Length: 311
Ligand code: XMP
Image 1 (spheres, rainbow, N blue to C red):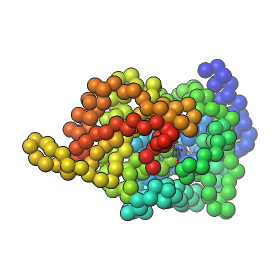
Image 2: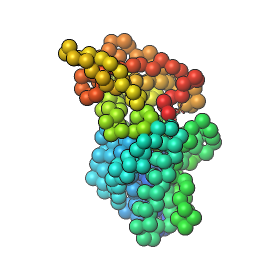
Image 3: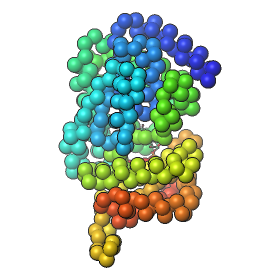
């Protein structure tokens, strides 16, 4: 905590010296890194920071609302909220190939961000939540999604105050800056979001199933003491249905896959030994509460040979 305060004081001075009275743009996803950068910059330069939150329709339940609540309402930040849900879903309609989906989401994200950047006057800096592992890691397995790739005429000078920190240190700094626990201790979430968990070509119906089932899984993990213990947990929904029966009637509905893994560096992972009774309870809740679901499966595959995400 004391080290975090020293870090914050130093960074505030450095940011003020670097930026002066100019404006800084930040893509604020609501993830740990961008949230901590935002809080740090708000402390250093207040409304000279322009945060852009792009809601691409692939965020978890409650996330866009939390970003608005924390940054606009509580921290009084300069926050632009962009509702790009229709735009992303239209671009993604009928695209089933995982790498293509990732590329479309990444490219569209940059396009939306670029449009917002062009509407702003006098921006000279771009803040990014780059952390130390981002610099030293290069992982070629899946296309990773980041805010690089802005066109030449929008090449701003970078502000990257977290670039020498590890994730744990970023969390400590976030906590010291007064961010809520739900934001600071949040599990990792991929840039393409629920888009890589709504398997195959994304439909609104299955996207809703992923979002609602994920919310139930998170709620139950929190209630049962697994929230801080398991590294990453989520649901995925395939693009096929199966036959079931409910109240004596035949159903033809989607399965929901549960995934809960532990890892140190995300390069390998093991499966969490979730108590059977809890799995049964989650299954019951999801099949009763989420429309269009008639089965729940638990993924027992470690990495390798599976990856953590399904796409
Ligand atoms: P995989 O599925 O490759 O995932 O075993 C390893 C970790 O990386 C996360 N992940 C991403 N994170 N942008 C990110 O910031 C991405 O495009 C992305 N794809 C996967 C995944 O959630 C897991 O924690």
